[in-house]
Amino acid sequence: MPPEVLDQSLNRNHFQSYLMADMYSFGLILWEVARRCVSEGIVEEYQLPYHDLVHTNPSCKDMREIVCSKKLCLSLPSRWSSDQHPPRCPKTEWPLK
Image 1: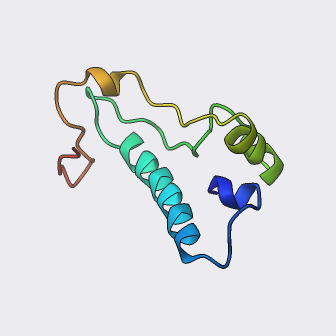
Image 2: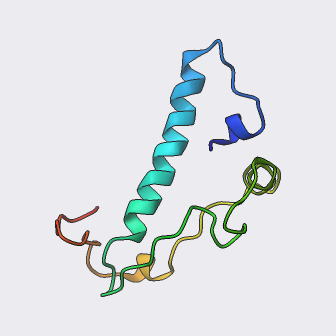
Image 3: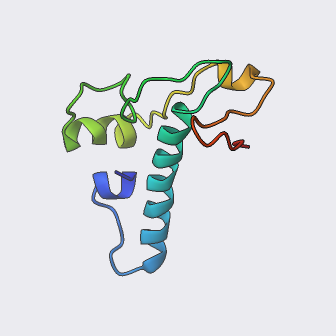
């Protein structure tokens, strides 16, 4: 969930607020897709966003603490910054750039 939803600060009367929340959610989806793409011959197992910071079934309170209070970001595999080739998704083999 986007920070605005977690901390209940989403301005429900302003359409732009929904767009910003959607962009955050889309970023989470991109992170999930990218983790499942081949990078340096490795494909990560599926994990939920923030899997390394919360238990397997986090509450809204848990997520609010991680995302809003501590302002922690999703972790990225270190090999992504050193990979010489763009990641490729299994089966489709289309390059991600």
